[in-house]
Image (cartoon, rainbow, N blue to C red; front, side, top):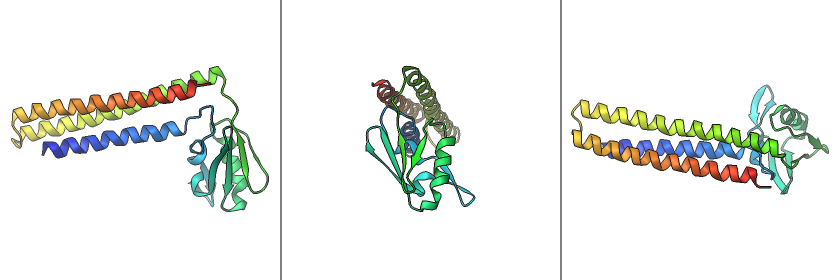
Length: 185
């Protein structure tokens, strides 16, 4: 019973880290990455649709993202969505392909992005701690209902803390990697 509860906690903590990594993919660095634009929502027949469902995105050069819509009639809507996003990029199109030139980041912009990364790290750590809190409540409930002994409760609590420490350090490592990537000139 304790093992199942801890296994569930571990799965939830892993998903918090996966969500953080996906979040980091959308934060701009000095290099072009299709992940930067794939989640931009485009108004398509009255429905907000992720760009990755409407077009193929690629990075043929280190400073360029190419977007080729499956349906050429959506090119204007895709351009509009990119301009209204918080990326600060100006798209250019030739009727079939949208090109986004990624300018080098200024030092000020890099520092702003590091602050954004720090906030996202804190959100991920809160998610990991929330999983710990929920799991600890479950363990207390098991003990209260005499489903596990007091010794089992404390052993489970100890293992839960080890899991929490491990995944908190994983969050820190992911954040350090992203900050290093942002600050790299």
